[in-house]
Length: 306
Image (cartoon, rainbow, N blue to C red):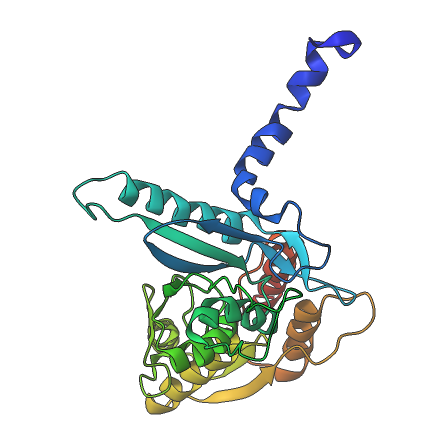
């Protein structure tokens, strides 16, 4: 019954109810966990074969916190896509007959170090535990519940996160497939032999940028890279290809390097570059962000054209 508040109030709460239903799979496993538990934000689905998942459900935290605000487009949507794919496969009797796919999905919080900590869950089943010296209160041996074995990991999103996770997964020969990491460094099969991805390397993007500069006959180019493997390796690939094409890269800048109080770092770097370089065209390799950060980078990109 709507009570005194009326139907209008209940109708206004409908978007919130739909939002909670979207995040529903992210809630049950976390219930009953102590505050600060390292796997508070996770999903576990039982199955004959377990796949790992790494998604930036939250952004980077501030003021010492590991996780920040929810990321709907780059986090929740991709998470739901994996759950949808699992449902379709498990409900199709022709794809994997008599086999059910399970999952253990963790939140990277868009931070490489946090993702590395979370990824230890995927290798626990492969680490032998010696319980010979451990005894229960009754004097008997302990009953150790062995964690499920993960046969492969889907993720991560950011290139720096995937690189960090790949370094530990390769030690245990666990395959990793990324859906968004594009750094050229990940193409090195000698270092990332258990890593693969379903998106092209930034090398192709760098080549496209070189082709545009050559077609427009620009000879002075300034580059600006955001911090991380995506921006830094992307600009490096652009510079390498521009030199191979006998183009001149006049100035290189790496950000962030500390902005004045109250000024967005990326915008500050762009205006600093624009003021000092005097280049005809300026190229930026910057990681994709949501919300206000996206608007800041759009303003910075507009400043490049001034």
